[in-house]
Amino acid sequence: MTILLFVMLGLFIFMMFRRNKKTKDQQATLQSQFAPGVEVMTSFGLFGRIVSIDEDENKVLLELSPGNLATVHRQAVTKIVEPAVAPEEPTVVPDDASSLTAQDEAPADAVKRPETVNETPEESLKRLNDEGKKDS
Image (tube, rainbow, N blue to C red):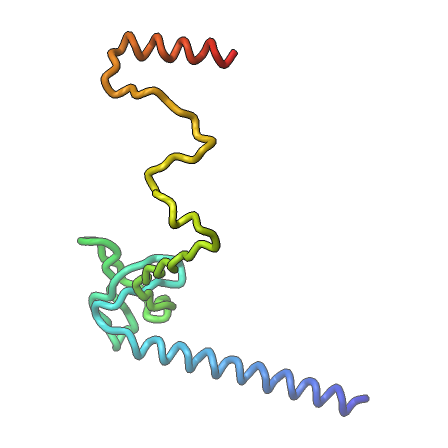
């Protein structure tokens, strides 16, 4: 029983060190990609473009918007933001013959409205009032 406890403790410690090593490797890979002009996000949610990097003091100068600069610690920059790619719309192929009919035709159950292009304001009011009385 005691041996099993020590084995589990050893396994737990091994997994903890392994996870820390992976995290450090990912952080090193990310920081090697830092260069002026790269869009990034900080750990506290600010988005900006890298203007300069001070290797000696571990500082990054970010341009948040034109004319607004912020200096943050190098480790605060946690993500490189890649521009969003617009998804392509898939071509829709209908299962029925609806695409073969003319697109200008109205559906059979559509309400037919009289032509109101050359209507005066008084005629429009009269027509709308008459329609309201028919619905009641």
